[in-house]
Image 1 (cartoon, rainbow, N blue to C red):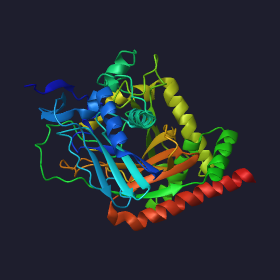
Image 2: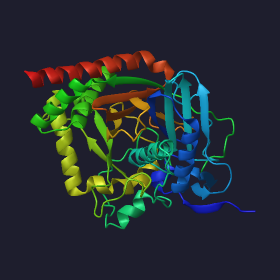
Image 3: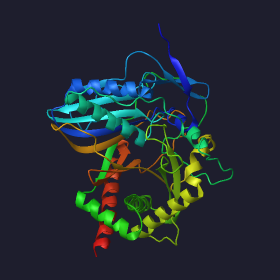
Length: 418
């Protein structure tokens, strides 16, 4: 009889997502006939290639341990219903597995969502796994055995940074407020079997392809990026909704560090390879969307040039050991960048890409509450999307937030076209 194998304790950058069991879903909306047997075989191949997905977490002292164990693999759940209900029928528990695959069908319209625990994978990592899943599925449908490359357990960002000579700078500004789900590094709470996930709703601002192309042209002309323009629209929206001057807002967002250090870090080599950058609007930057976008881009360039962004993950223990600030002007967002469509057989067509982020109730009362919800920026099929995951009771406010975001982006494109 084989027994569970302790892989390693979670590092601080991973532990912050274990207390509330934070999961992230990556969902494709499909048209066509899905071969469930091929999907199950593809998922099995991916689980063999990425052993962390089939591992689980166990409480230990002040944190959790990543544990690999034989037994039932992570589940595929299949239900008939509204594909917009991305996680319908899902059974999610970090004590048994750190990934799941959820299928929701309505005839030939299907939603397929890969769920991964945030302690073992960030968006770049999980999107690489998602691409591998559909590549294996396509091979199987075309009569070829799947042959994904084998991977070990991913390393923590702390270890990967230290091995590249990145050091924590004592006294440096602590810019890191990792997402809206940070937990203090205290003793791990006892498991609560009946604790349910809080399933948020999603509001969305999505541009058309021509609108996104016009925004990209504007960004290029003004020396900024689409992310800079989207972030500026978020700041203008939050200032209006929170009835605060822009100078009282503080914008914090994640930065993928894989190509920001030497040697570069592979997509699935680590768990959460994320640094964090801050931007505080000043009077010199002004109050226009273009001015804010330039300011955000310039601040990021400065933070990368000084190394402040690269070493920011090393400050997580200091930040997570105290309750997050309650300042009303903190705004958090995550940018997943441009998402490439995965390989698909000819009989399936991808209509859309969606995200979902969920967590269990905050037992310790330390979670940073965001009136704006959890904001994820991405571009798929040449369409910019800003998704806001939020509790049901804020639905009316989120509808207004989406209208304001769209109006700010519309106004920017009109300026660019003038």
